[in-house]
Image (cartoon, rainbow, N blue to C red; front, side):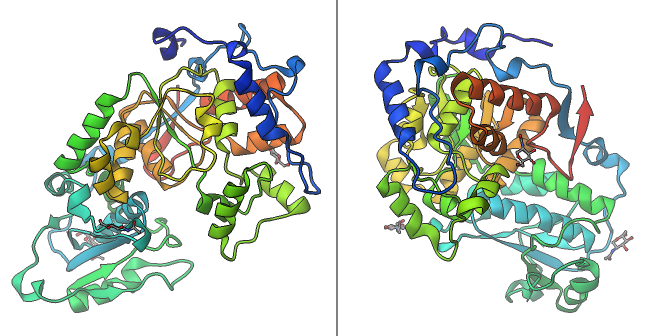
Length: 457
Ligand SMILES: *[C@@H]1O[C@H](CO)[C@@H](O)[C@H](O)[C@H]1NC(C)=O
Ligand SMILES: *[C@@H]1O[C@H](CO)[C@@H](O)[C@H](O)[C@H]1NC(C)=O
Ligand SMILES: *[C@@H]1O[C@H](CO)[C@@H](O)[C@H](O)[C@H]1NC(C)=O
């Protein structure tokens, strides 16, 4: 089914070839520095010559969303109908607190796991503890971010959640069960239940290596319900986020662009064309993780392991048919390297700091900012991410739940492969367009496990 691309209703399309030559020239200069490395790093220069000038052609549907989808991810029926599920146990085995660490979306992921575990153990949950890593520099707690009463209400029939503990245990700290050191097949009932029964109040941090394969159906359903239908932002935060949403011109794309020094360092990729100050920032963030070199770097890059730079991201968006006048909300933290590579091409870029008053913004914590990005991204017309991290997984799932299908994870692998093959300009754009259209049509690139099922359309 073809629908009118949304951007058509917005503004006339500005063809790329009408862009001021200066921008084209600077884009070219940016990519044309010669590589001191032994393997060819893709002198990716879409604007390098007039013969390879990138001009969108009329017969190509100008925008990715007009491709008819064959498959889409939706929440599975088995967990949405609570009547079909066994009712919760009459008797609780004790109280459990889920302790969550890291950034907002990582904490949420751990909380989701913890909800499933609580049900698996027939435990009662107390409110989770959100403890933020030092670099976030903040103290926001679960109740600062999420709506507590809503959470309790929505978990009814799945897991009992209480605000207060019974008097006899309220004064002591929970017994901490360490899940992190146990690898491989981990059975929560076998390992954690004895502690729960003995101490009656325990705390755990679910560990990533322990997956959900041994959950009962009810535990899986509780996980899905808790993760996707029981969490909404606290009233204060939602009011703030909703004001921010109103300030962005509609329709707009929420773009989660990841190219911070720590992320690039962590990727172990090298980008010789970056500015000395960016390379310096990456080196400072590097720690033990040495970048790959030579053949290993080439293979790594072709496997899609290297984050897209802001300029590369701008190129892919153009290839997919987004006019450079598109309104774009940058759902990213501060500190993206070489962001000019994007903003020199896409001019209507909005950020939290550009839309919120300075004082308000300065006082805001990392988690609060992440919550705003999350809210904007699950309510935007379209969501595009250059990576598939914790935030992206959460946003993609929530959008699938709401039936917002204009969601795309850009393919780093396709970009690496095509540029490694020497494609550039319109040829590169065409190849990227086809690869992404295929992903979009087949619902690939943003597959959601566990609570979501693939539906043929
Ligand atoms: C939890 O309750 C269900 C139903 O009452 C029961 O079948 C299951 O064995 C219980 N599990 C634990 C770990 O107590
Ligand atoms: C942490 O926050 C406090 C106030 O909230 C501020 O004074 C301080 O400069 C911040 N530290 C860092 C490293 O950002
Ligand atoms: C990229 O290259 C790798 C190996 O070099 C291959 O396995 C993969 O299928 C390629 N992907 C695309 C999108 O061409």
